Image (cartoon, rainbow, N blue to C red):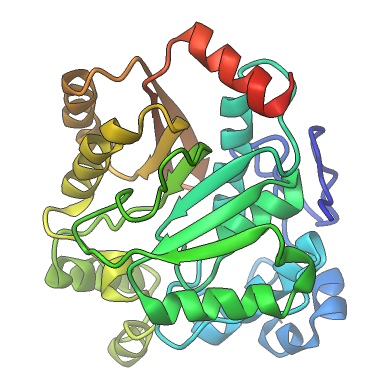
Length: 327
């Protein structure tokens, strides 16, 4: 059963709020490790007091990050089981929640946020962690289809759903058999989605992904041995890189969305690099997208954005909402 709805959520964390997160994001305050460890005891062994007298965990330790995710998903989203295979992407929960809440605003468009199974989303590259469908369903009651090119990732995601039986009717998965297709083979004829979402690979090559990970760990002050160990916990190839980087991937996504323009209200994707946007805007003009929006997000010092496009005019969008959501 969904646990949150339209109002800003009161966080059970302590400390000052993170004003750059979405107002409804329940992770705006500092983590309350007393509450988190009480519900997920395995987290306790990773918690320590830093030089600023605050409780925290070592965010360069993959086991600590995984335990924190388990605790957050259990405490805030009532997920009793969550795990991922070694080497797969372990996403930061607050940032993933932000994407979901901004999607809700996009669907509402100043009106009431649509809740419940009438809303169906397509999560492209759902990965082994299944985090977007979990948060989207537990927060707004939405139905999700998650896709991936990696069978092992989908097996992991399916196990999460199987072991949280309340999610089973609302979250399903489809293997994308073609590495060159995004929507073809996934969207069935006459099938409709209210939105698609994607966190695309933004590196252009394995070497670029490796260099990016090394820079991150060096900036965190980790020694060479720990950096080498951490490289094994940053995501599989399909999660981290794509020939041509995020520009090539998102360009293909936009071009391949055209035949499905009457089957989806909003296509969306994260865009990591601001310099990518002008060429993506040009591609959207080329394919004659009717409505294009850019939604900025911020987590700490990192700025990202959601790029959204629709092939429907305002009248068609309103008709879609009335027919599917009864608004």
